[in-house]
Amino acid sequence: MQLTSFLKNITYGDKKPVITKLIENEATKEIRIVFRKGQEMKKHKTKFPITVAVFEGEISFGVYDMVHILKRGDVISLEPNIVHNLIASENSIIRLSLSKHDSVERVQKVNE
Image (cartoon, rainbow, N blue to C red; front, side):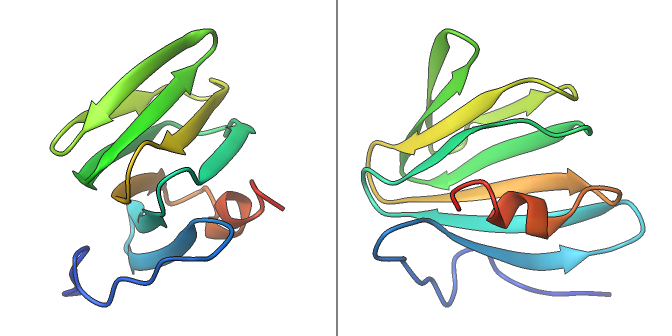
């Protein structure tokens, strides 16, 4: 058993979002991404499906040439190899669910 909180011990990065792995089990990795207003994760993709949920705030979630405004409580899932980006419209806390085969390091390298 693992117990954690997406809403405790929040740290905002000065220049880029803060990415923290909170849980890893046999099926998934649960990642928290904390954005300051205006911060972004550049266009990227993964070989595995993902699910993104907004715990707090609002983000613009770009998929191809469309932008989806995601607010608190919204959830979006993507199939593998879909190019996407995220821009925080306000301070935001995001849950990213990754396949156990995906890596947190890949996510951290998006804005390098």
